[in-house]
Amino acid sequence: MQSASPFTSKIYERIVVLDFGGQYNQLIARCVREAGVLAEILPYDAPLAAIQAGPHRLKGIILTGGPDSVYVEDALNCDPEIFNAGVPVLGICYGMQLMAQLLGGKVGPAEVSEFGHTDIAFAGHRLFAGLSEEETGEQGAGRHVWMNHRDAVLQLPPGFTAIAKTENCPNAAFADENRKLYGLQFHPEVRHSPGGRRILQNFCYEICGCQGDWQMADLSQTLVADIRRQAGGSAVLCGLSGGVDSSVAAALVHKAIGDQLTCVFVDHGLLRKNEAAEVMAFYKDTLGMNIIKVDASERFLGKLRGITEPEAKRKIIGEEFIRVFEEEARKLGGADYLVQGTIYPDVIESGHGKSAVIKSHHNVGGLPLDISFKGLIEPLRSLFKDEVRRLGETLGIPKALVWRQPFPGPGLAIRIMGEITPERLFIVRESDWIFREEVAKAGLAEAVWQYFTVFTGVQTVGVMGDGRTYDFVVALRAVTSSDAMTVEFAELPYALLRKVSQRIINEVAGCNRVVYDITSKPPGTIEWE
Image (cartoon, rainbow, N blue to C red; front, top):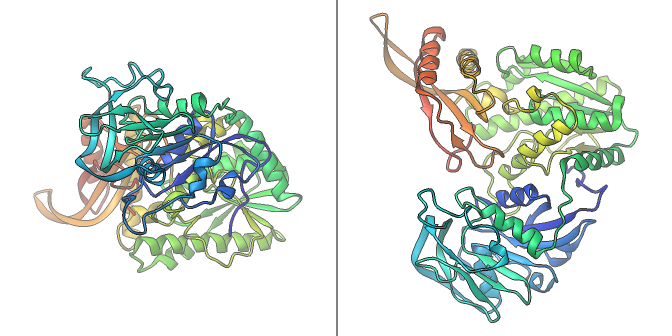
């Protein structure tokens, strides 16, 4: 079941991003939106008619990176007509190489591959306007960018000139000003390319001529109008988890249709300590929303008994959520639409375009096919997490709620490796409470994007009270991010880690060892399952 297309009540400037499957592709769209321009992602093979379709004004096209080589058999290709569409086109990495090959250049294996920070020399070009100090290395060694390529443009297509070079890549960027076609061999979208976001901003404004009409305050009005048009006079049910995304979605829909909305909060037995009581108190007593609490913990835990595979857990939880919502809708006399707090990273990681399925989010890939609702209302489906937070602030949602750390819909089920049992739930729930409490005491609650504990399922030998133990290992996970697409582990103070470890081992029966996860994303994910 698909939700309605968003942003249809206002005409925006629009940059289309064609997805060739690179790991940073979603960051490109996010950077363009940060610059104040609507970016929409379409599959790499979208025909020109689809790219030009829709109410929004097409101002430019970006071809993303990808894992393939453009010269191999069955290499991913785009509609060549996009280069004659009358709008500027920017190719990044694979996108640059594809542009070169399709327009008469030559692409092949580079003599020297480039990965990571690479010194670069820029020509004077408006694509690089205003970079002076932004592209300076940390030690002042010179400008650098983030490279990730084995192939290179060996011969420029007719009409193109090189506008940047590195020691091993003479065509690190190129331009055809007559046709407004541009290419970057490096990745401007990642933070490892200082000034890269300025380059994307320059593409939007200096080259595509955008004015910047993508603003959160205006967006809330657009989304409210979209919701009213989709829902009409129908009864609407919202699956409210208490997390940031579902909260903003509920507030947005409530603003649009008022009492037509009923929120259902499902306690699936996989919540954090005291979570159910906190959610009900805030939404019912503080915000005055029409909210129903359903205690379905025995139902969910029964369905999950004996299940160890992560994808199976997610799909079971996704289906049971829907079934509970359907039952509650029938009790209310029926509801045509179901509201979900689905956001763009949920869609991406569940498989989008050429992107791989990383994990099926319970509200996307975990949804059953036979849903009784007429349709889904997912107003945040095309927004990144930071956009959701800013939207929440424009709606007047309290800062403490908008900026609380994310909590996944499947809850503690994906923080328990292996089978879910009462003992394991106790260990992860109590250890998580201690971790959150100590992070708050240290004054770091807002500085860290997300922090929690994981039941690893691993047992190790320990010594407690002069006796041998053979108990479980708990992992601490704390990360910093702005969009959940890429994260770095949080460099928490050793004193804090020591205090948390001591408390967990002393206070949580069944745990005798605590470790700290220092994996970034990629290659890891935020949650362990």
